[in-house]
Image 1 (cartoon, rainbow, N blue to C red):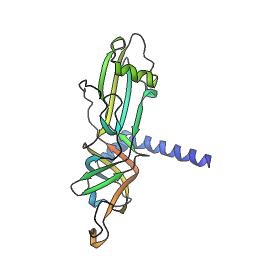
Image 2 (image 1 turned 120 degrees about the vertical axis):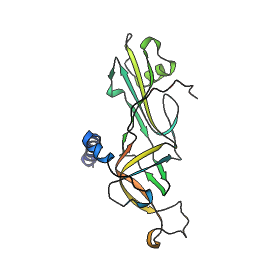
Image 3 (image 1 turned 180 degrees about the vertical axis):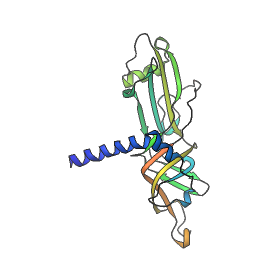
Image 4 (image 1 turned 90 degrees about the vertical axis):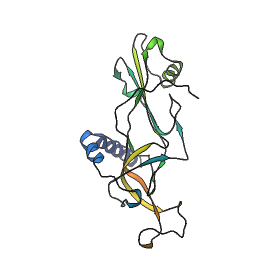
Length: 210
């Protein structure tokens, strides 16, 4: 079973790489937006809605509630790839037509990271120093340091692109019916999923961490 698990992990990594290649990503982003209630099983589709979840994460630098975060560390303008920190949890996306569930175990997040700190190493904030110690970031004595943080926040509009399956809905009363009188169903995105909020990074004003 070990070789099978290794092959599965390798294939998942290859899929993530292919989905993030610029040409492949642009083709996915060009997919027309569908209403959640109208997506078809096993076909690649894109839905757009707001995020909700019963399980929450907290962004490590800003402490913002979210369902995904990524933290990036730059030193003298160089992104240290091994320093990136990322976590995600399953969530729901809702539009005017309905609700879909998103399983994030193999999802690719194309989410921009905004600047939360840009400072000389000798003048870093206490929070930046705490994170550097926690994640073993190799800060030089004389260096220019930048920290970037990206999240998918609650109630944030987001695009989800991928393939879904449909299961009987738990959120709709049993007497309600869907298309042609069939039981109403909820789409679940779990295959070839891309979560997308592509935009330019911005500077986030410093805030007090609760």
